[in-house]
Length: 193
Image 1 (cartoon, rainbow, N blue to C red):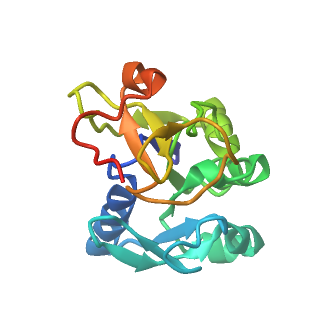
Image 2 (image 1 turned 45 degrees about the vertical axis):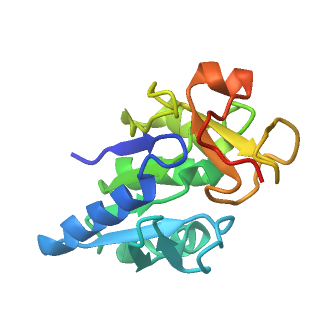
């Protein structure tokens, strides 16, 4: 039975690596999985998904997926979406259509909330409509579960103002537990620049 999955986690919880491993597992078993991402994420190229661990694969954009004919989509056993927090409500509705009408599972990976701890549009609708919601965990510097994504300035200090979307890696964001997120405490090991 096809299902819509939302696998979310804070920065550094191996969401992209997990997505790429799931796609590999499908291929290894003779199945076909289509990798997709929103056009917002162009850090590694327009048609590439790359994990921090160095895994990478070619992908299509969600906008291209929406333009595909049903016959083309039906060639796949699964659709895997990375950076799903950047999906629009309309795109999440399309995932629901793929699952319910075409009977193909869609597995979405992304952040739940931004650096202000507010939901992204894609995450909001995935939380509302997904059949299965799973958290991929990582830890704060203190050892507690990291659930929050803190944005850092050039000095390594937590900032709370700015545009919701700012693509970046370890120099721009760090995962913190809720307590340290609200304190703005990045821990003793984060080097201030």
